[in-house]
Image (spheres, rainbow, N blue to C red):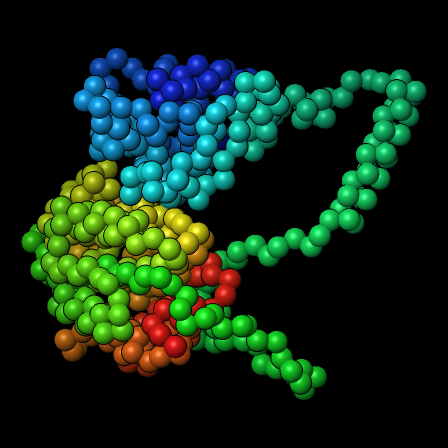
Length: 464
């Protein structure tokens, strides 16, 4: 059908504004392309299943946020957003987990929620660019939203079907346009240089490719090549880690090394001063509890923190999204995977959602499918992901490939990582480059680790 749009809102906070937004968008998009529960939900439907299904079908998710979006309470005085079955939370989490385009719409008096005010599964929303929808500028603001969605606004309609104009009016318009252009050129020429923006750089699975940490070879003319200024030794007030390794699966194929891998990596991190949480053979409840505990530890740490997450075990790609499997995973339906497994996107958002936090997430989870192909939309290996700001994400092998357990007590990736962590004076990109070479050598080129980074400078996560 073309572009589909989901409008999410709280009735007690923004029902009137959401309804008005819906009516304006309906002028530019077919009504059947817009979902808002007021008129799209049929009597007797299961709200949770239908909302999840509708979110999965949309291309853009509009989160209408009023002044009380995060604070509205239920009859027991508890914040609705903290309820696992809160419809708004389910909608937002579903959109973020599917990596759908999420646009926060901030109403009059509303501000963008802080990461610490959001549940772990929707913290990633703070990384999404918001737009404002003000009462006194409603038409103009809706026009901006419509343009962002690719709809045909009044302006584009007039461009496609211009009204006939007399020559004097045309000349007047031309003169005005020239004046505006002149002012615009003057404004641009007198602006200070723009700051560099964060760029995500991938380390592709190609042995000849350079990593971020490997500078291009200097030419003879470069007698004094510029170098990145190394960060100060005391970059971070706290260094925290969550390490999970799952081997003893109850309903799918058991794995030999992940529990050992987790202990090996945890010992290395602990030996260089990390405060960490270690879980082995964790079921769904244990994994989720550990993530919540870790999120609370991060929030309580204060100051600038370095956060490391390492996972070894089964991981699957279903519908283009990645999930980490707890040891009690026994899901037979694709629709239940996001509840029976841990969404990698939601986890990444939880860890890397703060300007004062550097997140390093390492996944040795690209093992072959637990029991052949579980689901129709399941794909081999794990899917690509995009690093959020201030984050590095590493995988034990390339997207779409499977990692090896190896012949020893630990996997080639965990072994190489634990060894390299103990080498001081390496930036995170140098660490990952060394791990990549060690794993490739140990597996005769059959496994080639891959990573992506949005960092703009050097950090030394494991000591100077």
